[in-house]
Image 1 (tube, rainbow, N blue to C red):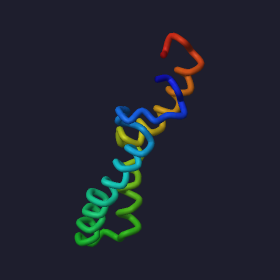
Image 2: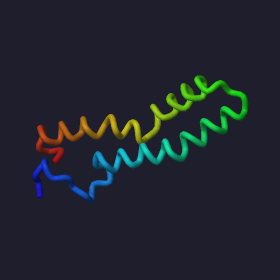
Image 3: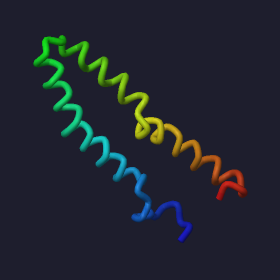
Length: 81
């Protein structure tokens, strides 16, 4: 099954799954963190900047950057398949 037009449902990093992961992170962790830090007197804008910076270095974010690049290379370089 090497048809690129068909989604591999066993791929735990397929686009829909990544979307679910980010939605869960926002619904649960992000909201809780914003509420907690804001309740401690930190300005909401500062809280959002802090959390955004933390997310930008998270393994999930880095994975989202790397996977498409790896996918492109694996199609063009046979040894990476």
